[in-house]
Image 1 (cartoon, rainbow, N blue to C red):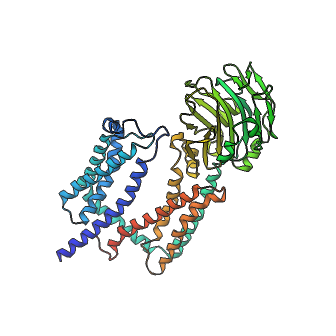
Image 2: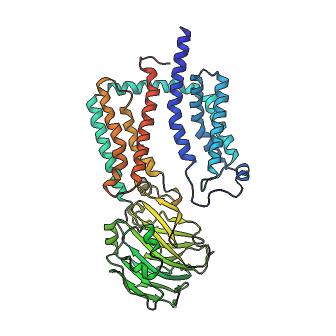
Image 3: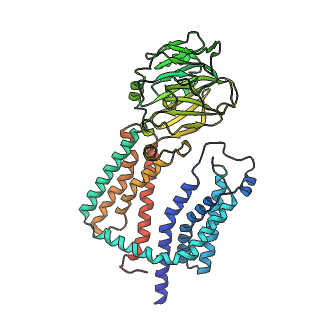
Length: 498
């Protein structure tokens, strides 16, 4: 009899361990492998960086707390495999330490991440703490919560559950589609002018030369970008506005182009117009009609041939600014040292806030002229330099729109919010899987349909590749959630608790 009890206890412990281990691995990997910035990846001396890397006190505390639940999960899993208490603590510490070391090695190649062996010690220490002090006290609480949750699920009427799931599914799809609209360039101002070399009020000067500028109401493909490397070929691609600055006065093209007026004394030469301190160009009047054309197309591309006179100048300078003053931008290209900043006005940035500024690293390594083409299709922001794609891209989805509406983030944090949002909206639907019995099993149908609907809801607004990844993340959330419920709830199928 005691042997049967021991086996049942091991069975329950294994299921507890798996139920906690699955989501914890997902959480740890997502938090530790996301890039913090988009600078160069591998350090010149990776082994030295790993050994000498340091972390501040708060970072050490976070690393310890992050791995504490993992230690609890590994403790339960090892107990379910028949390992003794000492082996559970030692095994959880070693396994967590091996995972932490693997993560630090991977972080060596992730931009913006700092790999350090001291983090491995903090992670292993957190796992040891969870296994040694928390695993046993937490187990009865988990059992009670699991039994209570299973009882509530089984006592809920089928009609209530089904109606609730359908309503949630509709609301989730509507929310994603609504927030996807916030990533479209649909709120550009018709009152803004085009400026080259400074803002319309003469602030934030940029010393350099501009050869030509063109704006299109579509996201140019790589082949079109390579065909737009000269003023003549750029005009042949039917821009909304285009200016050939190698001529004096600048030649105009496009249905919405307005004459440029010199402010100060710009220098005109065969390579373009030279602007800088107290010298810039601005259109004689706002580019009326451009905003409406871009809003209808839901995409745009800005192409400009630019040559910085001071490549190492760290003060931000407005190279091309379709806006007003220094804080109002439809779209702006800004030099910041060797990096390019791009500011664009979208609904998710809020009317009076241009954040986030997209930073593209190492664009201006010299004073030679480069043709920059920034394209945005409502989801993906890309930069081409002399016809070649820059290594960095930015993906703006519904999650980014939501985060920027309530809590504006920096450009290096863009990405991942949309996946988290899709997973969060799919999470309630995981309840319809395993715990149901008999005729209630058909309730699993909304759970399997939900990830597809939630993931592809943005297609109602704009055709975009991000939806496929969102659907995959939502489906995995549903699958992992159901596995967690199965493994956690099944020990109570007979009504007994450990």
